[in-house]
Image (cartoon, rainbow, N blue to C red; front, side, top):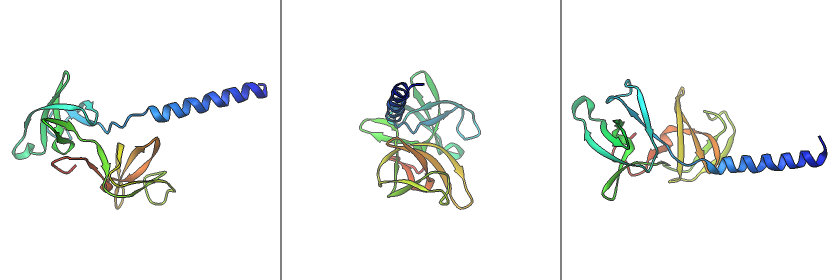
Length: 161
């Protein structure tokens, strides 16, 4: 491959990677389950910020779950992911509770790859239980890493996650 072709390929690769990094929306989806509890299967996800229609919130053993409708989907979400927004109810976005380090892996033994200011919206992915803390994968402004789950909350949610 000639030097000019190699440079063109490298330039295109950089443009593609930059586009992919900026294209990822901040969604922090909520799982919709077929019943009121984590043992029920996930039937859909709803992105943060989406308006949902709350059909009912349970009492007794179901008190932490609300039955919602979103588009053609009807199911249960944890009450802690919902927040009021004007006259509507939305899936609340995830924010940091304070300045938080973003680590390359799920633990403090990994290098810090950045810092996320308090109150910043992040896209929260899967969380993993550790020995002393749970760690969640997050995306903040295109940087993907891990932070402690106790530094994350649903913005405006009436109940804790």
